[in-house]
Image 1 (tube, rainbow, N blue to C red):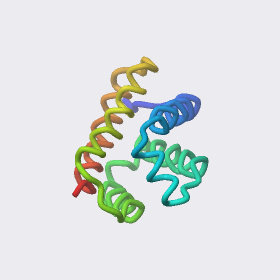
Image 2 (tube, rainbow, N blue to C red; image 1 turned 90 degrees about the vertical axis):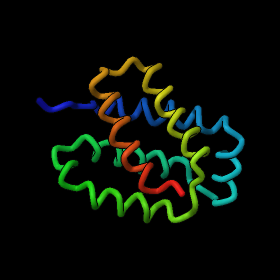
Image 3 (cartoon, helix red, strand yellow; image 1 turned 90 degrees about the horizontal axis):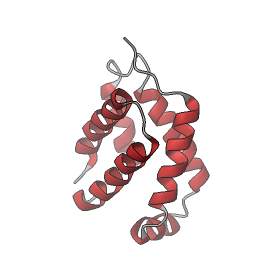
Image 4 (cartoon, rainbow, N blue to C red; image 1 turned 180 degrees about the vertical axis):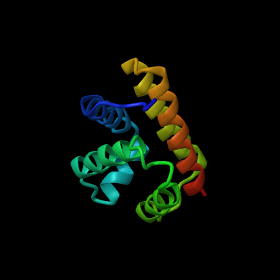
Length: 118
């Protein structure tokens, strides 16, 4: 049985997540220092989440790891990754997503985070 996440849910998740993240001084400063286009970042995050839920996701794990490493070539401290991941999980819990969707997204994002945290 395929676990699906509707596009409306993806959009809401990303918007709510970045609302939370942009209240964290560290991330606000980091995004400002890098002159980050937040709307572009949200767009990429939506695409990323959709790819995680695609049927080909398991076969593309190696490709996903490479892409995540390429986009995050800067050093990511474990404590900052924990804050980022915590805000994502908090957002999912507030949205009351299907537990299967939430658990799968947590599992896949955690797998990728382990690969890029230094």
